[in-house]
Image 1 (cartoon, one colour):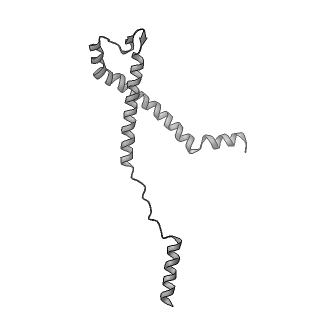
Image 2: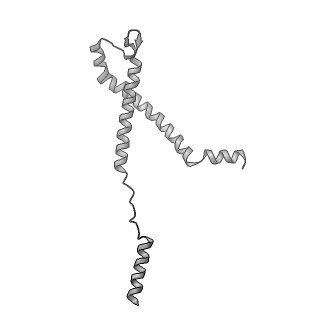
Image 3: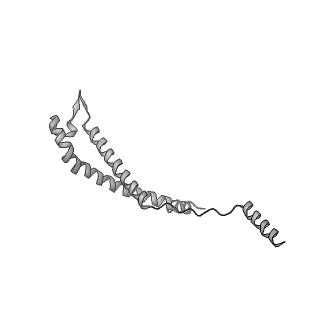
Length: 123
């Protein structure tokens, strides 16, 4: 098989295409969550707490020369992403019905016993 055919087989496999779609959707979802944290959570919840602590900007938070504000912002963003993903997966699991398991058929021994019993009744 030539290099072009191998690459074609690899690139257009279902798994590779699904992964590419997942990465693109993940990037878009990351923007949504960043906006949620920056535009909704920070102004509603974090800004009042920062004003009470005497810091107006989260990136300016520092302790003994260590600026931990950006780290704190990243942690809040991570927690929001984790919570939203948890809720989405939980909802998806509720929507998906468990696969119905077909009842197991009789075993070979049970079939042979049934055949023996039928033959003995005929005789």
